[in-house]
Amino acid sequence: MDKKNRGLALLAAAAMTVGLLAGCNKSEFPKEPAVTKGEVSISAEAFYDYFSALAIQEENGLNRRFEDFQQEALPYSEEEGETYRTYLVDNAVYHSINEAFLLSLYAQRGLELGEAELADVQSEIDYYVQSSGGREAYVRNIINYGMTVQFFEENIRNSHRIEQLLADMRGEEGLTEQDVMDQFRQDFRRVKQILIKTIDDNYEALPAEEVAAKTALKDDVLKQLEAGADFDALLAAHNEDPGMASLPDGYVIDRAIGFDQSFKDVAFSLEEGDFGVGEGHYGYYIIKRYPLREEDLQAEYADYYNQGTAEEVVFNGMVVKVITQLLETFNDGHEEQRNQQVIDQMVDRYLKNDSFQPEAAGEEGVDPSGIGLDDLLDEEQQEADADAGGS
Picture 1: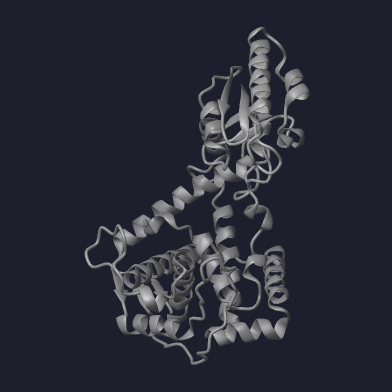
Picture 2: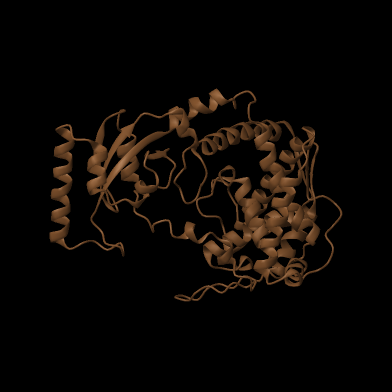
C-alpha cells in the first residue's frame, strides 16, 4: 500500500465520483486549514474531499462500512500501530498537499483555463448533472454530502488545470521531442501477430480434437516462416485476432500495456525482423517484431485502460517522473503542520455522512447514491477481455 503509487488524477476522479454520494450533514466546514506545508495550505473541505474518496474506495474493496474497520490494524503495514483510519488520513494529507503544490506551480507559470478548457469543464459538469437525473438532483446530492457545488466544480477545474500544467512542461529540459523519441525507442516495440485461437467466442476451451488441429496449424505456420514465407501473407490467411485488422501496421506496445503476459514476453524477447511463438489465454501467438518508425509515435496505444497515442503515453510517463521529483524536493524541504482537531472533525463528518451499504453474499451491489455509479465507468474498460488481440 505505497502512498506514492496512487495517482493524483485517479484520486481526483474518484473524489469527484464520490462527491455525488448522498449524506446528511449540511453544516459549514471549519475555517482553519487542516494541514499546512510551506506555502501550501489545505482547507478542511479539501482534506474531507480527499479523505472521502479514499475511504469509499477502501469500503468498496473490503465490502464493509468504514466505521466497522477504521480502528483495525492495517495488514502488511511496516508502521507499528497503523490502522485503516491513520493510513487513510495520511494518504489524504499526502495527496491533498501534492495537488495544492501542483496548483501553486500552475499559478507561478501564469496559466489560465482558456475557452476550450472551460468548455471541457462544462461538458464534464453536464455529464454529472445528467447522471444525477437533472440539475436539482445534482445540487441536492452534493449539498447532502456536505460539500458546496462551488467546491465540487472547482475540483473539476483543478483536474483540468493540472492537465494544462503538464502540457505546458512539454519541451523543457528532459521533456524535449528528442527526449520523448529516445524514451519511445527504449520502451516500445512494434509487432504483428498471427493469433491461432484455442478458445471459443465464450472464452471456453475448444474440444481436444479442435485444439489438436490448431496446434498442427501453428506448427505448419512456423515451418513456413522458417522456410522464408511472407509473414503478412500468412497473417492474412490464418490470423484470428480482430485487432490486427484495425491496426495493419501492427501493435505499438510497451511492457505496461494490458496484453496477455505471454504475448509481451515473446514480443520483448525478439530482435528486429525475428519471429517467435507463445501460448496464452487466447491460444497461440505467432509474433514478428518490426522496426519502430518516427510515425509510430502517433500510433494508437491499444489499451482499454490507457487510451491515446504512443507519444502521449511516453510523454505522460516522463512528465510524471519530473513532477514526482519536484514533489519529493518540496516535501523533503518543508515541515508538515497538521491541525489534528480539524482532521478528526472531518473524519467524524465522514462517519456521520457515510451511506455505504455492504453487499450481501451473492447479491448485486446497490448504488446508495441512486445515480448509477457503474454508468460513470467506461463499459468498454470493464470488458477488456472481450477482444482476443493478445490483450
